[in-house]
Length: 148
Image 1 (tube, rainbow, N blue to C red):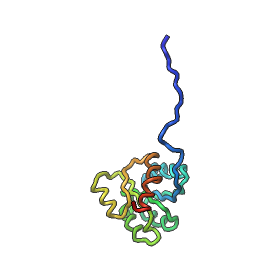
Image 2: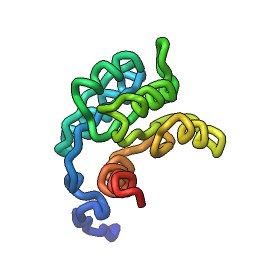
Image 3: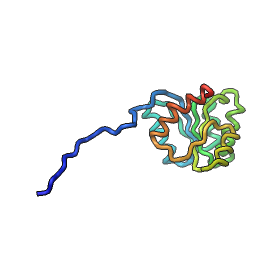
Image 4: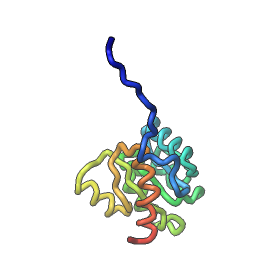
């Protein structure tokens, strides 16, 4: 007879059930699947989330929705890319204090500097995942808000 080990179910460590803070978050992402996934993850974590797929619509919705955080892809269809969205937010009186996060596939120091120059507070490389999203909203957003 072969010796069999009994397996015991153990909880996954390191993943909290929900983010500890709640924000209004605008997701600007042209990939439908990724946009939907981010929207669901944010809502499950208790955030109020709206998803749009292009830069012009992002500005319309941001003015009405007044998000605290905007997660924005850089390569968007239409007349406004992500950098244009960031510049427009920084010029808009009601949006200039929003926390802008470039959520992108562009990697490297040059891409990050372009994002910061456009007005983004952070440059985050995709994929972000649940743990990264929670860390971003629980820890990083607070650092931007306090200027530390």
